[in-house]
Length: 296
Image (cartoon, rainbow, N blue to C red; front, side, top):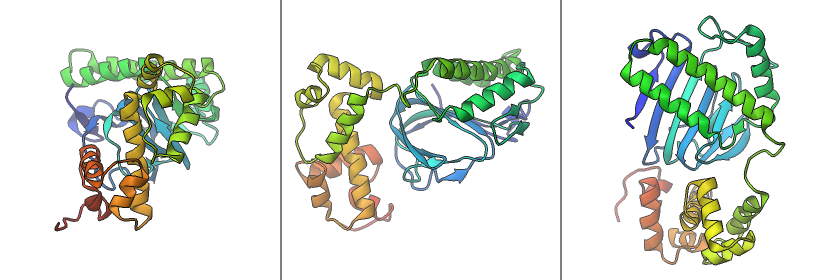
């Protein structure tokens, strides 16, 4: 699927004055300051297609995996944990809401077929839900794909269809939230504890067998569950955690690169540098200097 980026006032959005931005972006390398924290003036939906994203929404840190949907209300802050967009693929939709009250009551305007009372109820429920993340909402991915195709092909009736898809997205979200249990994420507590344990002892050379044992599963079942919840194999999941911790150390300390490599579990600085550049597009030294070229 080709990438797509539409911004307000571009010709493709002339028929959609309520759409501030629509995009499908595959991010292969890290670009500094590409997702700085800012206060949103519109209602935003971000759907993760693949990758692992560290975002801060309204002052709270959240980790998103494939199938997760983030909701950012007007007046809430949003940005990357480290002010950049992580590696992966994400689609988003930013809507200008006709009216948004502090308690979440909203009016969308004449383009929507939802009644004013339905819009107000949806807005209030989204705001009081307690978490801006809707977990494993794969149906939202289908809506974003269909929306992408409608924008691309612009067949007869596409304006009506896109507006219908936006209404469907609201309906899908509210119905899912009303069924969702009280857990913040549909992610077993055992896996949250696993990641905590791994981060506390990344210098250890973890095996799949050891990680599986920590959550009480066999290797096959563990690998399938990790793939389902994160989109990665267990070892790639572990590598992403190692790189995430390495980024923190590179940004927050003056540790030598070799010491950082050993601290997060790489057996050599060369292996660390190769893996780091593969995942971020920069060597550790370039990353620390914010991509200023340096001589070896």
